[in-house]
Image 1: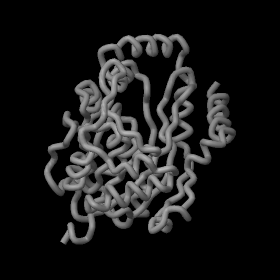
Image 2 (image 1 turned 60 degrees about the vertical axis):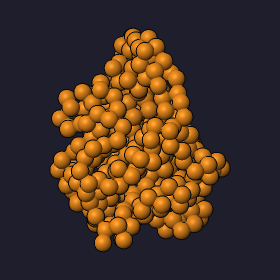
Image 3 (image 1 turned 180 degrees about the horizontal axis):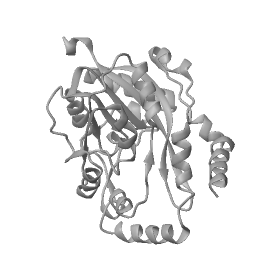
Image 4 (image 1 turned 180 degrees about the vertical axis):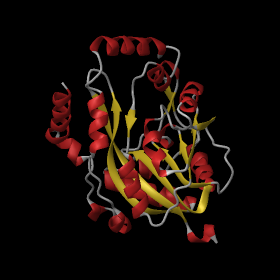
Amino acid sequence: MRRYLRGATARLLQSDPPAAARYHCDARELGALRDRFLQLHPDAATAHFLAQGLERAFLQELAAELAAALLQLCLTAADANLLCGLGEMFVVSTAQARQLLDASGSWTRGHLFDCGAGGGGVTAQLEPLAERVVCSEVSNSAAARLRQRGWQCEVGEIPTQPDGAFDVVTCFNVLCRAARPLSLLRRLRDMLRPDGVMLLAIVLPFRPAVLGRARSSSSPREHFPQELIAAPTFEEGVLMFSNLVLRPMGLVVSVVSRVPYYSRGTHGEYYVLDDALFACRLKPERTA
């Protein structure tokens, strides 16, 4: 059975043309960022994540799916899935995150802050890159799970950690779901040490929405430039985010990459979106 599962995962990665394409970016269309594009590839951690979805018992998954559907009548989809053990997500492996950090220049394996850590699957991939991990979540139930896994976690939309406290700050697929995304990004920037690195991931095309209970959604209270939302291509979206969001915030893109953003469904299925990954540093004048 194990051999079959591994083979199924390999076929899944190899036979689905979009899977390979989701790591590809036309660097020629990235303008000033063309030389900062880092090509990543699916690795063993990616295959392991996909294989786990094939190993689950059918009846167990069916029961979890039904329970989550009922809970979503009074909870957000994210909270319902978390309580039922569904919807695990994968953005980057430890090795891929290390590649991003290495390509950005020198960095310190010290204190890492992960914003919007969810169920902790992505945080677990980042943990080997730090001596100490602190994370945040807006959900009390998610925060409790994160603490059970041994990480300090604060509850709230905007972190309250001290300025200049972290060597690495990560924020994966949170800005598009935050009510005050620009305030959040400024706070994360201020939490960076002068020589620190921020790893950001955003889904492109960029479609911000704040998810609520009973599958409801609303517009964020702070708005991104329309040029970013209307960007017709992945590459144009990368440029708009860098030029219109990061640069005015005093953040310089050191490295950019593209990866698939996997969310595990049920019965061996998964959902996938396109993530733009940015490794950013503070502008020199901010570190003087």
